[in-house]
Image (tube, rainbow, N blue to C red; front, side):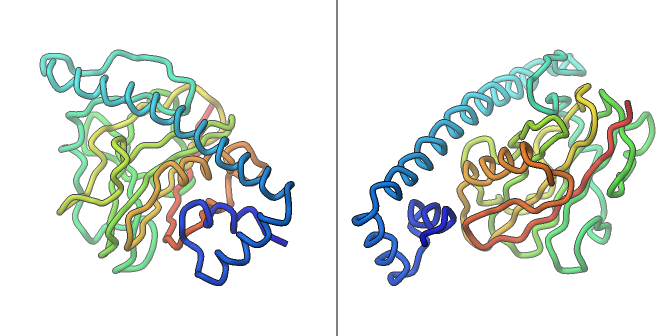
Amino acid sequence: MIQDWMLERYRLGELTAAQKAEVEKALEADEALRARLQSLEADTQATLDRYKARAVGIEVRRRAAEVRPSRSLVPALAFSFGLVLAVAGSVALLHRPDDIRLKGELGDPALHIYRQTSGSPERLEPGAKVRPHDRVQVEVELAGERSLVVVSIDAVGHATLHYPLNGDTVAPAGFKALPQAFELDESPGFERFFLVTSKQPMDSGVVYQAAERLARGPVARTASLALPFASTQRSLLLDKAP
């Protein structure tokens, strides 16, 4: 039986020649399977359309903040997903030495999250308690990986794509921190961040779609993203106090 993951990889051109031939033979003989493939394609396109609209809005606000340096904060706009874009200029405050890692052993990709405070940025450990309107910064260690995607999910079933905003997952030289900080919104429960890395370029829309599926499911706090390509995942969950 052809599983959905094989159909996803078939759509992305990531099957072996033998697997591709198997899927195409099954599609030719099975009308229901063809309908499943069409449904996956339609769902992916709808997700990408929603993602593009959100990404454009975030990018517009980021650029607007850059041309108004006298403003200390982006206006507090309420988004339907779990985080609010915060100060682009806060990125420089949150760089940390290379030997600080929250996930993975030395030499592995790692995910770092810091909370902005009145003093030095505070490193947040997995399970750390956070509150609505806390501002956090995401930093990463790629450890030789070529590309990355950063997404988050929350307890009320929303997913947010944080990086990239332009669709290009290949990291520029020396990439360390996302180009914007984030303000936690008032949704209850948790915020869980994912760093997905690969030695090859990835489809950020597919990662975002996997995050949406996980956010709506019963194991959003603990399960990995179900991705149809080889990758390394790191996640860090923050518990949001009421």
